[in-house]
Image 1: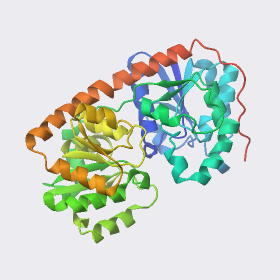
Image 2: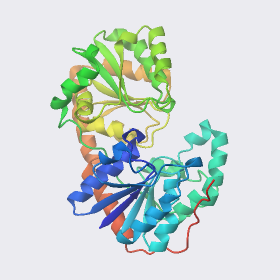
Image 3: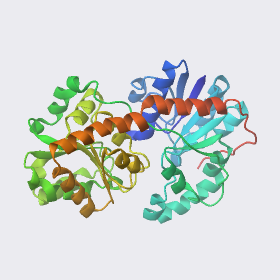
Image 4: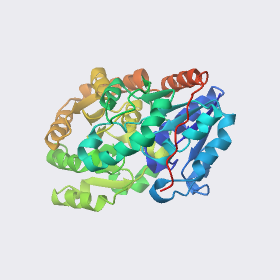
Length: 397
């Protein structure tokens, strides 16, 4: 089977959807399937050559993210493929190729990647109204005409119901999601990781590894860490990830104000073996997000047997807690503080049991083979379905 992936960008900093798409392509390649990608990236972008699969960049993006070449590139490729996966919502890559796919008889599925969560309506009501218009004209139609709209867990599917008015006739399906197994290159990456953070040598640490973004509650995590810091003077906090909004200076000032600036470390984005070493060396992984439809980094931490300390806004928290693989609390500073204190108060035997449960939780719920098998099954199913009616494409703005 030949699978075409449509997404905004394969830039590594773009987060979970890109990593999921890449990992699925790798696993499907093992099963004899071929994958290619169409994106809004400029074709000469340096990160395209490092991606590992054929990427057809249709950029650069124009006003409003519109990329005239995108539909043409999909039209050129579609006849040679059996099924397509559209990753995410709310950009030209998620609607701009639908006309070409229908004309070629290429069925597609859409992976929403948490982008129908009502959290966004709550924090940005004005933007939600703009999205409603886009939904009515373009995005909702793309979902209605898709073979299926995919969700990572039942909680995400339920949250998405009636997120927008109209186009609620899409075929919702829950499929396994995953993270790559970490830890295999941890020893090789230890020196690289410590070169990024020389002050961390010989210290224990909690690991945060994700985008530095208000949605992730980074400020609350620093406040919570400062509140429990004296429980273990040998414990630091690593805040790893790209700063897309320029928020780090403000967060560093907060750590300084709270008296823990020398115990909070900022390596930026950590990649490859150094990333695996970061997970492996941590005492626990922490992600107190205000919204997280899955939490790819949570599953990565579980894969190396690390207890995870998360908020109940991370949609896989029920699986984590049921497995005994970590702790989950509401997404407030007080609750995050209580969670860190609870973890630090536990004995070595309890932590060891939590670590063993973490690895089992990953294998049972979030492994790559299971996720790849689920996606493969639905794409094979879709390849036998011929969609009808054309979905209009957004006009150039």
